Length: 204
Image (tube, rainbow, N blue to C red):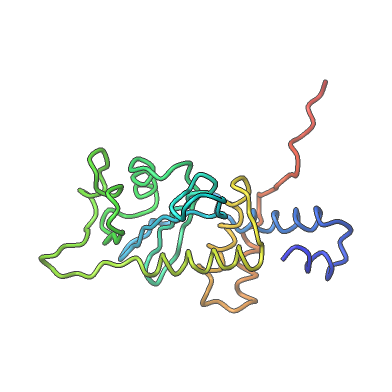
């Protein structure tokens, strides 16, 4: 995406065009979490990155773990995590999801193993009630995210992936808005934000 923007806006260098895009993504990122997700919320994790020769599909050493929390019919919040652990998932759930929500997850023991409290606080799949729990919405979001990275951006580093996720979250959360309304929402998020290519130079 950066090269077409560089060409269309006649920006002198690729680096300048890329940094302009990063500043836009930084503006789209929510500075603080809004209201907690409620209703039916899906939680799922994936790994973003390429394959390593000689390693199977299950190898994740060169890929970045990402967790997404999606309110059905509402917003998504995706985040890079250092490692997918029960403690990390529990922290994200407490921060972003109301305890009254119906939490849908896959069958990973990370959501229910001893040491995490979420299985005691969230209404989970109950075979007695027959409530259907799926993570199809989260899996669809991950599918679109990976297609966008592979087809448009081609590669994102672990360091810069959080800002790309901010862009993907914004697109999903404004999916029902017109292009004009989506732009206005993005512009309003600019206030008080400044991304610098390098930190301020220290005085000798």
